Image (tube, rainbow, N blue to C red; front, side, top):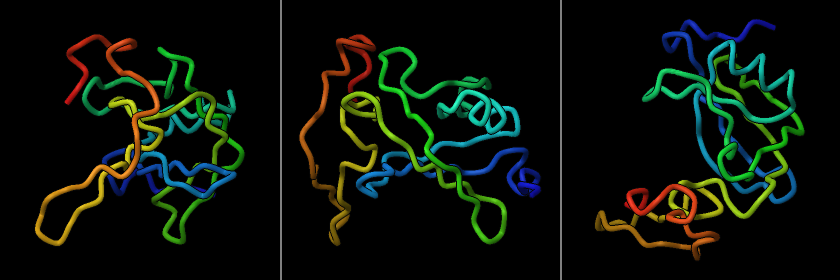
Length: 129
C-alpha cells in the first residue's frame, strides 16, 4: 500500500493511541523515513517539523512507545499507531497524554488529569508552559 505522503508536503499525521485502553496519547507527523524506522525498530519515530529531523518519542527519558500495530485511514493519508506506552507519560508537559485539557464552551480550558511526571527533572526548568 502506498501512503499519500505527498498530500502534506512529504508527511502524514500519526495519531498515537494506547493499545490497551484506547486513550489517544498524542499526534505526531511521519515522513517516509520515520515510518520505515518505526517499522524497523518497533518503536514510534516521528519527524520534528521544528527541528527538521527524526525523533524517537521518549528517547531522552525512557518513556518509549512500543508499536503494536499501524493502521492506515481510508484516504491513505493518516496513520493510527496503536502502542504500548512504556513509562509514565508522553507529554512534554508531564502528562500521560498530550490531550490533558478540555476546551469549554466559553473558550477556557480545564485540566482533566494529574501530572504523571515532573518535566523539569527531564527537560530543565524552561520546559514548563
